[in-house]
Length: 280
Image (cartoon, one colour):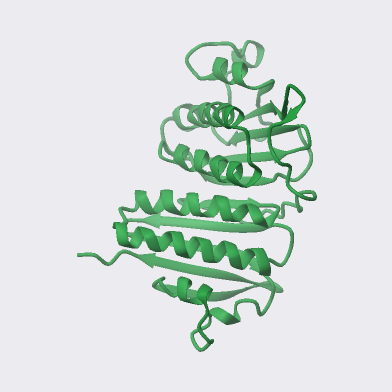
């Protein structure tokens, strides 16, 4: 088990459509770290297989919590997929080559893979992927080390939660997650384009105003409605987005939303944004 803080932690429900979100997260990280296309394909395929196992087997076909943690080191990328379901069958802990549940695919694509029951219940799949090929680095490592994972934002029923460090990764990941959820919420093309502007404005604000080396976001979607909560930010940094503040490019983008509030979070702040597609 790797002990350092994850570069990205994604918490969500194990529904078939959430595989799109997991792949979107990986694609967003790849954009920022310039991950080699072949390595990215291996990552997406292997991690999708592990997540699909959760969807199909962990909760008897019902949705349940799933966590995907991505660790970017100097020489390798590691991914851990966890659930709190029925647990991996004992036979697979001895012989994980059993067909039909994606484990042979994971074994083929990862340089190292472990499948085990969690002591508290559920299954953990840990996969390692080499970061060099023929002496050449396959990705740009983030600057510095990942900030401590303080548990925010944690899984909440129906929500998608992501925690990232360094903060700059948010610009690639948030837009992909928000657009995927907007599509599932049946946003019109015009309103869908607003999601681009708003997610970009939130990521830009995070790059200059995050209160530490880690940023979090919780996303909720229902029919024609999308909610984003991002933070923590430094206290007072949300002043430009208050109703009586002078207009700026960032505030104009965020005011495309139906609701924009600055909320206290301990010594810092959160930005909460609601977008509604009002088409008739």
